[in-house]
Image 1: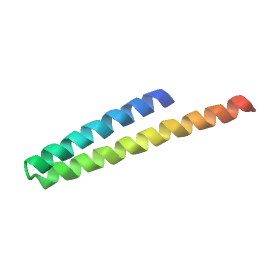
Image 2: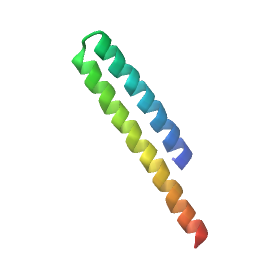
Image 3: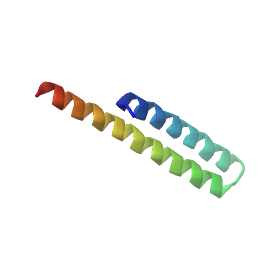
Length: 63
């Protein structure tokens, strides 16, 4: 997957995770809150992967 694709998927997972956390909090559902937090973290990691790919590509382009 491209760096842009990783970043987009990451932002999507992060946003969906935050919504799940909010719904879990509003409905007093700790399982949904935990699932949302896990998805948010997954999104953060995906974004970091995309940024790392960008950094590697920039490094290769300079060489």
